[in-house]
Image 1: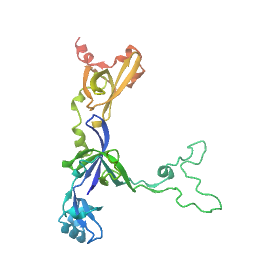
Image 2: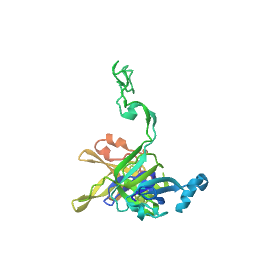
Image 3: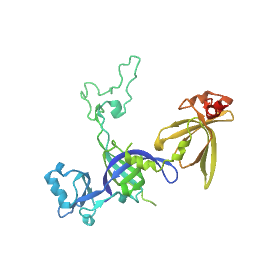
Image 4: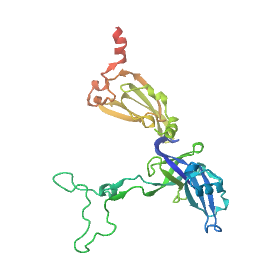
Length: 212
Length: 125
């Protein structure tokens, strides 16, 4: 259980103990109560379902109300499953807090990027575009989309304008600068996908280099 | 600003650094680490700009050393800065004193704005 659901608060700067000013993203992570425990007997695999965020009872469907009642927890806005080696240690209703990141050096953050709507190739694929002036008549277009009568079609996967953003992205190995357990806050070095207020998932870095 | 971010940065601010303003002559005492030794370096000059706000705020100090203009930008709330002494105050008519950059020689050091003593003592004389 090394994962939490949270909310991106925003970015700022903090001075570290060795007087270096580092850029940080403030994330409010947890507390995430365990809503359901999945075991091989019941579901075929080990996992726990955790929740995050307050939700009014009147905005929760009856079936979901029953789901929360069974675990003895409040209504949760977001639910997410964590696969585990062994779910036997988990306890229904037990709240996971940001303290699990206290001793970690690095975390991964998963979130959806900012939505950019229908974008052209210059923004979406970093095409260079054409000259702005001197009668070029070719400004921010893609160009060179295909060949001639053969193959007579545009190749699949050709980079073209289209919807851009709101895609899930993972930022790996963000350094944990500070954990404020009493405020459920974690400060990670660097930026995190998405706008302020977006839902993020913080987990222990999976590609962390083993300390020698 | 978000109240949570405000709270995090608030404890790192140094309100005593509000004492100096643009146009003041200051002596900035900066702790410098060389290996295991630590010493204090003093940079004296005129504050020509204060930029940004909160934890991001910086100030620029300009002086001319051996005929060459030198500018240093310091973060206002940096813990590396031990203290900022104000040794000359002035009333400026500008928020940024970039015009000092084009001055040479004696004129570069003199902030030719209204000095405090001109406004107070000067009037009485």
